[in-house]
Length: 196
Image (tube, rainbow, N blue to C red):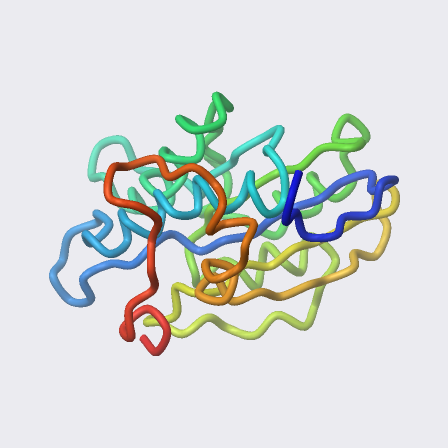
């Protein structure tokens, strides 16, 4: 595909870690903001166009009664619709994101798979440690722009880490040339998105 970011051909596992989309800080609900919805739709075009179609989509726990943590699931829905990949909600993630990362890192059935994780920002460093990266800093409450790529040469291997700005990826040809999912063209990051 034209514009795909370079990916090693023999990668046993590739994990793309993304925080849920933007929220209205302080309004007390668990939903994406309109900007968060736009970002999620843009990610649904950008991820397959720039990295390739995912084989699995996993989200942080969603409480079915209170809707707490709904944003992670809501952020994954456009990607699932665009690619036809079902979403799996990790029910254990709210208690132990570290073990989810370890399980995924050790999974022998993940050979040559691309997994996209939509996660709650406070639990992302814990998940990253489980995936084998101890160096992930805490994510600021207003930071929705990171995309982190983990590449594993074999199950249990130390990952190669690449950090991206979503705002920068949205300017690349792989995204700009991808078909949009909604009428009105592709997502253009606003000043608020670039500098939350």
